[in-house]
Image 1 (tube, each protein chain N blue to C red):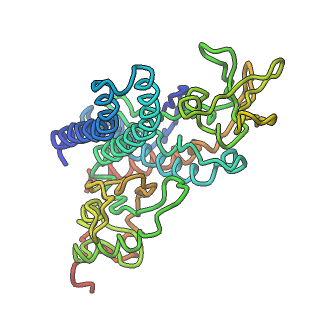
Image 2: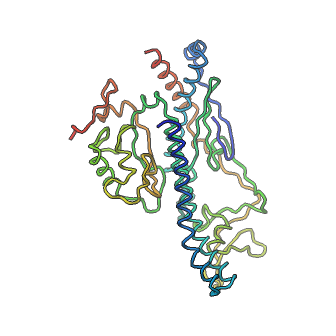
Image 3: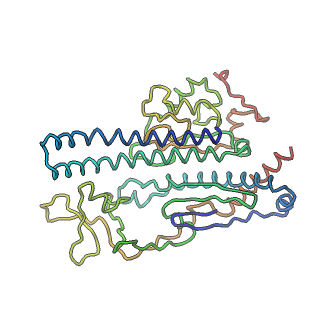
Length: 193
Length: 197
């Protein structure tokens, strides 16, 4: 990803976040405003009900901001990748990076669906490890297998509210997993089953 | 390497006779590339460390039966470099505890509010108020409480009030100097070897 593409992606995320916030807030406020305009509610009632809406919306906004912040962190991580980093750590492992009250228990199904959709190119079947340029990350982010909570990005967080993130995998481990050969050539393609 | 919120600086010396000799002989342009490689390595080292630390250290939240705040999960790790050196900046609440005990005092308020109940953990008094939970200070007491049922005579203590508090030194919050130095040397050596190949 070039710096220009990264910049465009960041703007796209900011726009999407603003639209999401507006979609969350505006519909809930509209009925209160309509009642006031129709003379069915006085200003004190409007204030009280609007305060309740904003209290609920605060959590939603917090959620949106946190998601955007985590996406920005991943973009920053990608932007900081150097040829040396990619050579020494050619793969990512999908791991838990944050605790959740109720962690998703469907990551195995998500991984299998994304791997199947991309022919397991540069990805392990029996471990959540794939080369940094494997298409499995895009498929995972796009909700392969019909997961509608996917965010659409080829980097963490792959789903809303997810605590799963990347851990780098060394060249030696990537070799032992059969993702790359000793000469650095990627070996795991569609033909691995 | 520096850590913000509050901010601190950690200097990591990766000097070795071999490395110094090579660095002296490379051009400023190559030196910038070398420093970029070191910055990238150290930022990834810090990310890996913070993630592992965050997952294994939330005794306070667990003890209160609360959800961890996720402050470390949201830590911002940024790498910058030029021909003069490499800097990794870590911004996370309380990250300076990595360097020593951290004394905190109230800013623009009379007292610190130290949560002692799950409902208050990671939340401000204003946040609770916005969600219909009104904390009050009983006369002569140094805590805030709330009543689940307004008519009840019983209240629950949710915050202790304090003029200051000292967060204990947590040296394990960031990777130690030896790890940082070893990884930096490994990145620099790799960069130089790739250039020589």
